[in-house]
Image (tube, rainbow, N blue to C red; front, side, top):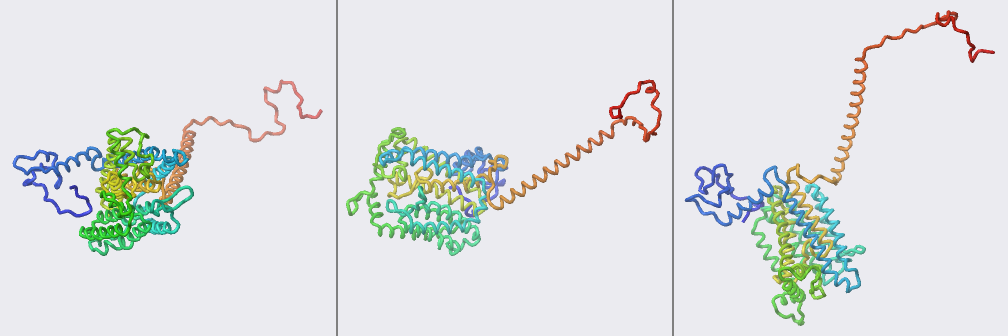
Length: 519
């Protein structure tokens, strides 16, 4: 198991001449030698875990480089996998929603066009955040947290309810889901607070207050008041990830797990709908004879009928109202049916690449704020994807959790892309300065003031340079003029007498009358 920098580890003995590991001289202490796969005679056998770690270090060193010569492969892996998942999502939303849109008398491209519009806005926001210093976002942690709580409270007053959950606020022709924005705001706020209290986290009261009480409890209470248990579970995972990457004592997670298990049991027992979903998942029949597991059952039919290569893009049969919300929570089943096992493996590989690359960013952070923020975003996206796939494949009861970057939903896609932008900013800081993407824009009051000052300084430098060039040109012209030989100056009479005789050569010419002379 690869250790993360969230917790201190015991110092390993330095590699010396009497090293028991058989490491060669010149190998740093605590690192396996390049020849670790072939232990020397008489040395201890190398475990498979050590071989995997050595292979992983060698692979990433060859791929990304070491020291100051990093080529930024982590940055481009995160960016490429995110864009690929977003493109697959738009394509599958078009395929999964077209049939129901035509049946409702709408354009078959309506859902895909909305998803593409939110994707364009999200990609722009992602690129902007990737070029903003993450430390600069700290000043917005508390305002964003208060805004998220206010919006979650507004949902309970004027929000729209759909499928038993009250999660959305209508904003003109669009709908906004504040609980998705609350995930990113909560991650940023927890990273800011835990960084300020980094030296006090060994005490349980500083670890829980104010991150858990009242911060996370307020967000969870408002989400559960809207009857959205799936989003509440993801928020619990985000809170646990923030505390783990901050280095909180592990025994607190045991108590928290027991409390959460008790709370989930109470919420399930007190809700007939949730209890019926659990009974249907276990193969039993609900009290009213309904089967709420039919959505997962038809999803399994879709995955099974896809085979290796699928029935073809756009040729799904389960999307003909057999799977409710086929373009949303169960879009992974449509991917398996139309693109087959190969398509689902491609999606899994892209999520694996994304998670591995973000993990590389997390383990390279030494600051608590950076590590908690990046680690929380990683657990948020990968945990939500895992829960969604577990529901579709029947490994968990039906819970309304979308698949990141792929499921239909503008708020979820926009917030996920913004979260990736924050991680890209941290990955960009690890790159060699010569290989970093150039800055397109500068944002923020301080950055704007600095840009104005730099523009004024550049303008003053250009003016001084032009004046210096003009003075240099004039001095050179004066020097060239002074170096030329002087011609003899023509002597002209200063004063001529009024009755002076004409010159000798003009005495024999005929007189003429002047034009101005009187007649």
